[in-house]
Length: 122
Image (cartoon, rainbow, N blue to C red; front, side, top):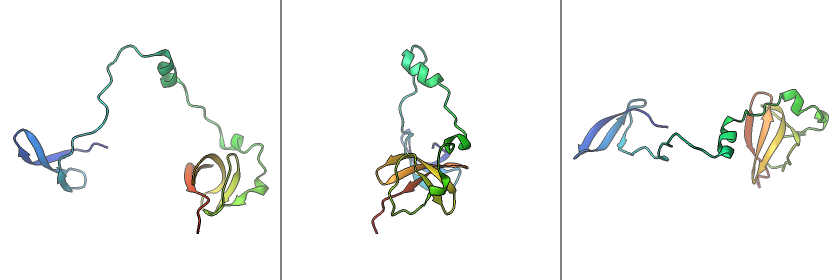
């Protein structure tokens, strides 16, 4: 995130020390990192299709339509979970595992998608 800063000290034409206008913290100047802005013009059809594609939205009820909610396991960070498995979280409620990434899982709950740990060794 790039925030507004006030220059406090310069060496030649380069800023050296700045103050953040948001939090009032002071630090050495760091140039904004990132790729250079893209030029407008031609782009491959595959890139254009991805950019223009509408995201697929599935309702919470449709996600759980064919799931047996009575068999939902109580969530524990020590347990391991699989894709499309239903779990019962003490805070977020019933959730459906959408993705497994090593020791983390993405779980869709009614309100939001959360990243949780699983398979944690004591």
